[in-house]
Image 1: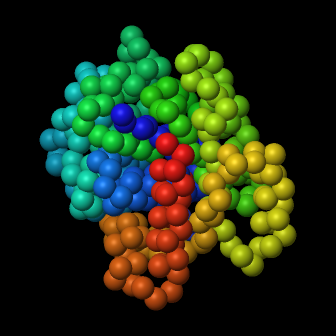
Image 2: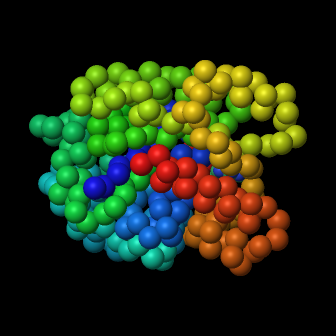
Length: 258
Ligand SMILES: Nc1ncnc2c1ncn2[C@@H]1O[C@H](COP(=O)(O)OP(=O)(O)O)[C@@H](O)[C@H]1O
Ligand SMILES: [Mg+2]
């Protein structure tokens, strides 16, 4: 059975795409046939993975609408990893025209259930019809957060929005649907880190034990079009190896949960 995980948070820059790319790559490296779908019109996933979409690829919005998702899926350099690249035309209006406006992605993905063990969906920094489609298609959501007041406020808004969306899916238990990963941790900012821990304490084990520390390896790997797993293999000095280890730890926690 396919597990589908949406990575979502209203705020930009909280490491949604970084988490999505590395969870998908981590699952692929663990032997699971994994598809990552980029719902952000800025399309960071394919370039971040070193995938160059051909110019004549059908736009993702059209592929979802026509249930032709399989036709836009490209192999990534990581074995077992496949990507549906982002589309600058994929905005809420693209879904609003469809008869199944909230479940278009869910329908399109249902055709691929037999082909993948895991699907990871990266979302834009907004709580709109695009993100609603991701939540309606997912079995779980992972919400990245960092030690910043705006991030925590938008985490709360995202939680509330997901809860509201799930009212349309009575078969899903809202408890346990969302989990939070703490990212971009800077150990020198102790007061802020303690503050974040206190904010998240009521969520209990809905917060992953693995924290992801700040590391230059993430933006450097992204700029090279590779994952930190591959980057760390070539640059074992510095914080790259720790970064790769943390993302492996997060992937293991996700797999243990399923
Ligand atoms: N743990 C981290 N340490 C350092 N930089 C990070 C980390 N996680 C993400 N980044 C960088 O922060 C920026 C925003 O991350 P991104 O994953 O694109 O966030 P979002 O998708 O939520 O907008 C990117 O340049 C990314 O490389
Ligand atoms: Mg992003």
